[in-house]
Each structure stands twice: as C-alpha cells, then as structure tokens.
Length: 168
Length: 168
DNA sequence: CATATATAATTAGCCGCCATACTATATGGC
DNA sequence: GCCATATAGTATGGCGGCTAATTATATATG
Image 1 (cartoon, rainbow over the protein chains, first blue to last red):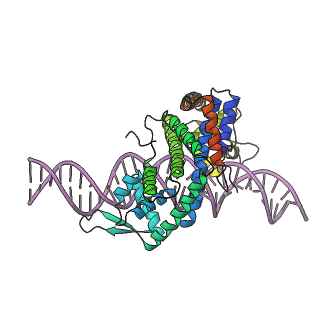
Image 2 (cartoon, rainbow over the protein chains, first blue to last red):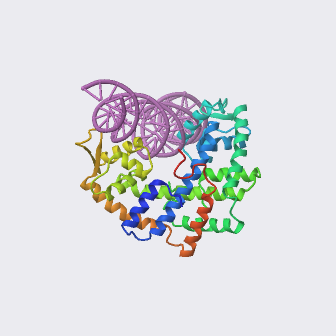
Image 3 (cartoon, each protein chain N blue to C red):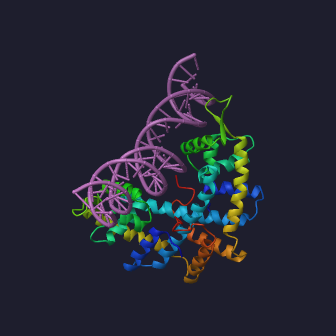
C-alpha cells in the first residue's frame, strides 16, 4: 500500500485502460515507492547535519581513510564523476566538514581530509544511520529477509542492458 | 547482487566496522539499487522520445483527459509542486508534445492539451512501457509476487514519520 | 629538449526536482 | 465599489547528478 501520488494516478489509469499485467505494474510502483520513501527518510535524518546522501557517502569514505583521499579516488569509490565530487566537496567544505589540502609532490592533486568537526559529525551520523537502517528491516525474520533478497535479485536479472554498474 | 558502487563501498565499510545488522543494511542497499536500476532502465526507454519520468507522468495524465487539464490539477494528480509542473511543461512544449492554451473565463488559468504529436508519442510510449514493466516482473510466479508485495509492505510500515504522501 | 598526450580538478551548462517569492487575476466581505 | 485575501502560473536559486570543455601539471616519446 501507500504508493506515491504519481504512481497511484498511473496505476488507476492502467486499470481503466485494462493494460496487461496490472499486478506487475503495481509491484513495480510499490518497489519504487518504497525506495523513494527510504530515500526521503534518509534525507530527513541527514539534513539536520548539513548532509545529503551524496555528501554522506563521501564523509563515510573519508572517515574510513585516516590519511585522507584524493577527489578522483572518491569519485571512483562512490561511482560518480569527478565533477560531481567537486560539487559535493564544495558543500562539505561550506559546512566545514572537510579541508582540501594541496599535494606537495603533484601540484594538480588534492588531498581531502576531515576536519575535527567532520569527524565528530561522521561519528554521530553513522551511529544514527546504522540504528535507523537496522530498524527499517527489524521486523523481518531471517527467512523473510532471505526471501526478500532472493525476490529482489530475481527481478534484478530482468534489468538493464546496463544494470547497476553501467555499460559504459 | 549487483549493488551500486556507492552502496558496495558503504557496505564493505560497514562490515569492516562490524556495525550491527549488516544483513539489514545489505537488504536496504539492495532495494535501493534495484529501484535505481529500474529508474535507469525507464529513463533509457524514455529519452529517445524526449521524455523523462516526470514528463511521462504528465503525458499519461493528459492523454487520459481528452479535454486537457490545468497545470495545478496536473500538479495535484502527480503529487509534485506547480513550479515543477511549469518546468516539465516547458520541456514537453519544447518537444512539441503539448500546447498551453489560454482560458477565456479566467485569465490566470491555462489549459494544457496534447498536440497531435503528443498523442502519437503517448500511444507509442505507453505500449512500450507496459510491455517493459510486464517483462520486469514476468519471471515471478503469482505466489512470489504476493510474497514480494507483502514483504515490501512490511518494510514500509517502519518508514516515515512521513511515509509516501507526506506529513505537511 | 620539445612536443604530444594523459591526468587532476574545476567550470559551464543541462536536467529534474524542490521551496520560496513574485505577478497577475479573481473573489468575498464590508 | 474597494480592499483583503486567495489562487494560477512563473521566476529564482539551490541541490545533485550528468557531459563536455578548460586549465594546470606530469609524463613519455621522438
């Protein structure tokens, strides 16, 4: 239940038009709506800390690398372009969570490190986040989780020429 | 399998840190990755027709309303803001799929109608789209579909203060 | 050594979404 | 009839993603 508004509208129309496999369409919309709802909740948790999901990922990667990381490495690990990393770093820098440091040996390169504040925020947010995720799937039993994973996988096989990871 | 790059990175780190309920985290990422992959595939189908998902929704709503609709009605039905509708209509107009028509009785109001081209594209795309969605969940048996729907629902109950539909 | 090529980061411009603020027009109450 | 308020659509500016182009620096090769 609880489809997003737009999907409800589309689904109603699909029913009215007697499109084939309305049940499949419904399932698709249900999956997408759930994911959107998760994203929305996630964003709501992060914004009070000046974070978006993208920034959060970089924060996490940086927190794991005690010596800091170069932007191109962040891009690779996060699976986004370097240009996008530049934008996310701008945001993190504005929030004083990271610092861009010049690299002495290669003057093109930067090293990104967390500030003290960045480390504090990271710690707090990771705690909050893992509790939140745990709660999300907390009312599924182990076999239910297994089932869900299997079913999601089964759907994923029908996807993409590309599929996650891209064709390039 | 086949998590998006960023989720793979996050998951690895979660494992390394021995966060609680890594399995839950994995399941969460799997759900999000599947939804992203669906969105990506969807977008790939739509772009050749000059459509995005947002534009597609409006096209669908307009195709269902033979007399045309006002932008504010579109916004309400699609569950997006009027401002966003303006932007989407700009795109649809650029592609010559819709026309904005002045309303004689209320000079603030517009009526949006599909052009001939708009109707043609609508027809073609809806066909394509319903076949695509049907294929997506086509390899699930009826009981599997039922299971999946139930499990997704169960997860959804843990969501949101807001949940789909918003708190306002 | 000079020049070509590769690489690092950024900028610029596009898209779709949002929230906020604005303009024009309608409408209801006095 | 006039003014306050509500409504319709849009402009503006932000975010986060993308691609393509730009600038600076490194490196490899003739």
